[in-house]
Image 1: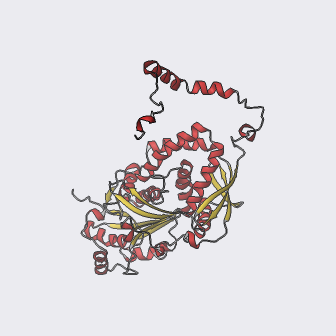
Image 2: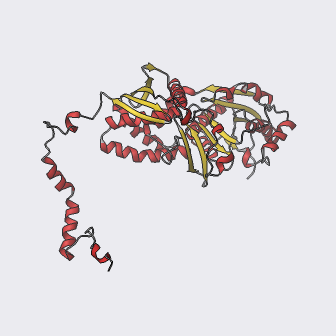
Image 3: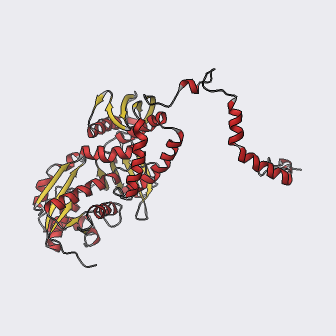
Length: 420
């Protein structure tokens, strides 16, 4: 495939070795101006000195935008309301961040008059798909460059040598054996001894949560208030979306909450093993699920569970900006109109234990559910309901008995198995 001609490229920049090397590589191989863009979505100290490093690497400028509250309110909270979990366990911390980063990257390209976009995703991962699908959805006229699919850099030593030869500042030459991704929602770990699924994760690998064994011996109680499916306060204190997640991250991490070790099916076809730390998200999912148990009727709750599986796939596959995701979101958001109330939880040695929940919109009625005498439910009515609900089963059984005197579910004759 011929190389695209570009004059100015906006690079999704993290400040790590790979994206730092991409800056001079783009200038060398495409002869273009490079503008670095970084979205602050909760990387913390990783952003220290980022702008100076980008300029020193050869970028004409570096744009950093604080998107933490946008990330929480416009991406994490809608996903939370959906109940999406990829393969029932992964809370999609990396997946959900990519459409926001790519959206803002496109916006920067348009405001800067750039005609190209670049990213540092490898050709074997999911992220390349997530970035580029967002580019296509928002501005397909921008040309896309993915250096990992072109260059001959194949190792960290190759990248270090290239950096040294092009004057790229590299803070350290030693690398963690793990590949990590950090944001407001989670911290992921891949590589190293995790590449063998039989290996237990090393204790020193974890950087956020304490081990459940080392967590406090007394449970910590937390109460979360929701309005229309969105969390608004923790222990009575109203917080911004990002601030609320940060608070729950602190509470969950010190109680060993949110560790997940799984083998997942990547979009590109292979399996991969990852370990995720998602303390605040784990607490929020548990609380939201419990509040929905009060506020959603059975049919809506069950159908929403089915859609949550599809929603999780769309997020994982990078299809955030699609008509289907938006349509499912509209349904999800409608279901959340009544999901208002509070949930009380105990955090204890890696566990999230529900200890109470209440809602002014609750569909639970003690006078309906009680086994004592009541005025709203006549137990004798159940006989007629059962007759009608099981009518198709009764008709089938009657037909089978008229044919050979038994049904397909008749008890086997165990006497034939007796020993002599």
